[in-house]
Length: 204
Image 1 (cartoon, helix red, strand yellow):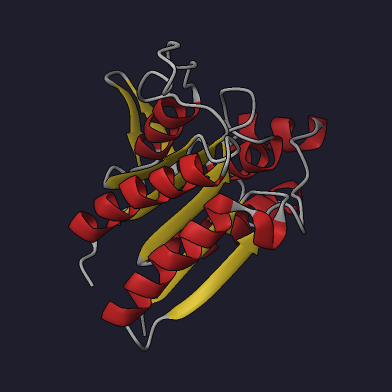
Image 2 (tube, helix red, strand yellow):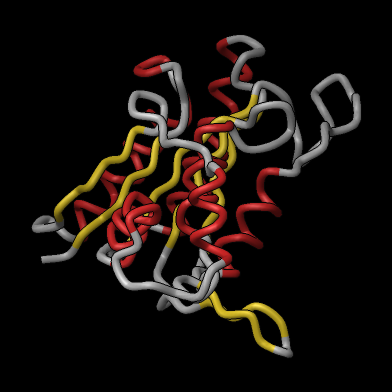
């Protein structure tokens, strides 16, 4: 049986554009794998702890099997390792990732466990698998706004692309919904554009 890991980061519940579009991605994946098991991690409803001194010390120390201060991190990594496909649905907060998603990243990106440091640079230790990244934003960041204002900065997409590649996950499909807080018409345009990208990646 295959497994799909769904990471949701929005605090807005059913009102969230990223969550609702993430659900659409899940439906497409389930249509291809009806037997797939869905593992959902709602980072807003069940936020993860941020790294503390004990966690940092454990990471920097020589690797120790079953280290108690890394138990939570290990559980998240195993959850990721068990997934054949991953869906990450997130809003853009202040040009970057929400704090709850950053906490997840900080738990799964671990030297000696998910990446190795070599003379040639960091090398991912996890096998690659498809990752679908849904990003919803109130503004526009891939293009100018409809009024001609320049796009806002985007530190979220390049960051997640780089940090996931660090641990070995390089097959990334990005689905963006921009301008979703600028009225129903702008939201409809955003959904139509994102759906077109989804249709190309996962045809019905």
